[in-house]
Figure 1 (cartoon, one colour):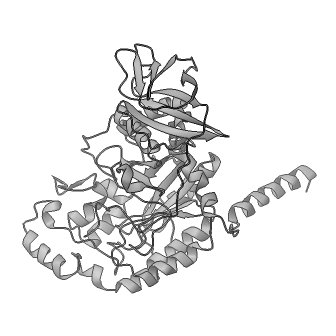
Figure 2 (figure 1 turned 60 degrees about the vertical axis):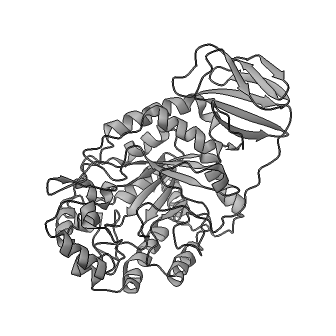
Length: 480
C-alpha cells in the first residue's frame, strides 16, 4: 500500500469514527441550547406513504385536518393502507437538493418525520418491517440519505418520532376521530360506535397487542436504533403523548441521557416531562405566554403537514417573513414545514416561497440569527435585539413603512448610530421627549420587511431565560 493511499484511508476511518462516537460529556443547559437559540429558523419535513393519497380517499377530499392524518380520519383499514404503502416509490427524492434548499432559504437546522402516526418508518428498522427499505420497491433508507446530506452541508438535524400513536403496528395509540372528519362513509354510524368502544381504533388488527407491548416491541427499540446509528443528532421531536406512561417516558429519557447534546421538545409526556422547549403549533404566542422559556413555533407553508394535492391556502412570502421576524422578536424559533409529493419533490408553490425567504435572509439575516427577545412591540413591525460587549443593537423590522418618511420609536435610548441594514447608509435620528424619530426614505427598501439597525451607546437590561416549566401549548391533533 502506498503512503498516499494509506493516509487517505486513515482520514476516512477517522471521519467514520468521529460520526459514530457518542458524545458523553455533560453539557450545561445554556451551553446545550446555545446553537438552537442562535439558529432561529429551521425546516420541518412531514413525509411518508400518506403523501400518495394527497388528502383524497375514495374520490372525496379529506374533510378536516392535515393530509398526513388521512388513514385515521378516513378510517382506512390497516391491510389496505399497508398495501398502498408497499407501492411507495419516490423516485425523484434527492436528499442533497432538499438540504441545499433549506440552506439557501437561510435555515440552520432540519427536523424529519422518521415515523409518523401511521407507523411507517422512513428508515430501515429491525423492530418493524413496515419501513422504507423492507416494505417498498424504493429500497433506500431515506433517513440515512437525509443525515448524510445534512452532514455534507453542515446542517444540524433532528428526528421527529411519534412515540405513542401508531395505526399500523398493533397496540399503538389511536386518537379518537369521528368518521365525518374523513369522508361520507355510509357505515359511519357503525364505525363511530366501534371507535368509541375501542379507544379510537377502527380496525381489529390495531387491538391485538397492548400499548405496553407495542412500546417495548416497536417504539423504544426504534428510538434506540436512531440514536445508536446517528449519535450526532441534535433534536428529538416527540408528538401526541396520549397513552404513554411516566415509566415508559422515563425509559426513553434513559436512552437520551447517553446523548447529552440532544435537545427535546415538550411533547414526550405531559405535564411531568417538560423538555427543553415549548411547541406552539401554527401560531405565534402572546409574549406573556413564553416569558423566560425557550420555544419554537411549528407551522405549515400551506394548510397541511403532509402533501395535499388540492392545497389552496399557501401563505404568501410576506406573511412568512413577517412571521419569522415576529417569532424572532419574541425569542422563539420558526420551524417551517414542507410536505414532499409522492415522488419526493418539494411542491413548486412551497419552493418558490422558500426562495423568496432565502433572498430576504441573504440581506437581512443579521437581524434574525443570534438575536434575542427585545420585549419591545412597536406598531409598525417588530424589534429584535443583540448584545455586543457592553452595547445593545436593536434591529427594527419594519413591515408598515411610514408614508411621511418618519419612523417613530417610543423609547429614550442613547443612540450611537441608525442605518439601513441592506446598504449600511446612515439615517438621521432626532430625540423628542421619550420618542426617537428616524428619518427614512419615502420608499421602503424591501417589498416585504425592511430593517433599520439601531446601535445604542448602552446595554439594556438582560432578559434571563430559565429552564422549561410545566406550561405547555395545545397539540392541535391530539385527542383531548
